[in-house]
Image (cartoon, rainbow over all chains, first blue to last red; front, side, top):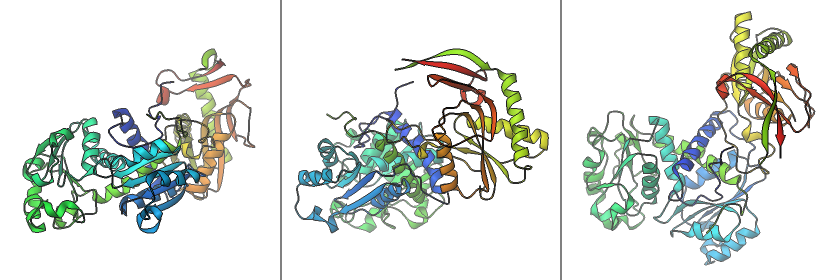
Length: 316
Length: 185
């Protein structure tokens, strides 16, 4: 018997995953797509396992995607979010971790505004930890579902030209995606206004350009990033209209990409800011497929992590 | 780590083919025809068995019965005791199983736990078949659950350190055969 590919008890980032591990998650997710197509969309696999969803930042899409994935695997789940719990009452992370530990969960899904909080939590609790987004650092399940969507649509990731456009500096989606897609052999370009680029954009590991047109020239996949109007982004450009003028994806601009290019967006979309409605709703768009695939990929991750018993994975 | 050594060849290709041809006749006879018949191969080596039986029914009856594929991984009763997780593969049901006579096909019947899981998957999650029957190439005994096969290629007496290995060209490459192995260590 060969060494099993998946031996991790936590999923903290794409950075730590090998190509074989990424491919194993995607392959496993294929099987879970079929579960979603059944009349009864539930399997007994994680019966008796407890999953705690801990969202220190508002999230609808990711948290509901995890919740559906957990329910379809028959796990018991419990949701804490900042708006409705002591997470907003000044409890330290360590105290939160101790309280969680006392409830003896098998897995904890965590989103936090600060980078590496999931890593810190993973060191302190026996349960497996899934990073559902830590600051502008990583969002591994988003990157995996994006790669999964591309692979299902295009039959491969290797050799594809992929453009990621928008607020690169504040995006954890970009970091995880560049790591994941380059590891799978794609040719990735990131683009955005200079005010929305990190200090050393080359350190991301992708080609960097500052124009939408240049980025999407000949692209097989165009991934538009959300302008995070609720965050710092407002200061980075003069007006929404001007942003759309230079970095909004329109059908006209899309002609530069391959004829069979697909358009992706991690959501929620800002119509008329980073993407025109004609594109978001057009035949190129796979935005809703990303949402559906997200559930399958998260089921795969939950399934794989639940099989590694607490304490068995190597931790630093 | 235990090792497996081959003790002897139990059945070769012509013998396997004869067994499976007889099984195909029995499956149709027991179901009273092919009208509501459906075959479901349990991954991995129940799939080529189901395919063979379907091809044989096509040859003798002139009817193509639907063939499904079932992966029971998500229904196993030992997921909390084995690590890491076994690889999950897709299940495929080409038609609704409701009101059909579903014949589960598997290569070896041993503890019966695989078949328990397969029945759970079919009944709980795919629909309400009129009946579920079981066809296995080899019944090696040692049942741990009250499950029996309706249609058996061959009964083989085994000890619990022995392993029955069925090889199909479709799943294993190479030669088709049934071997008896001994587990050591």
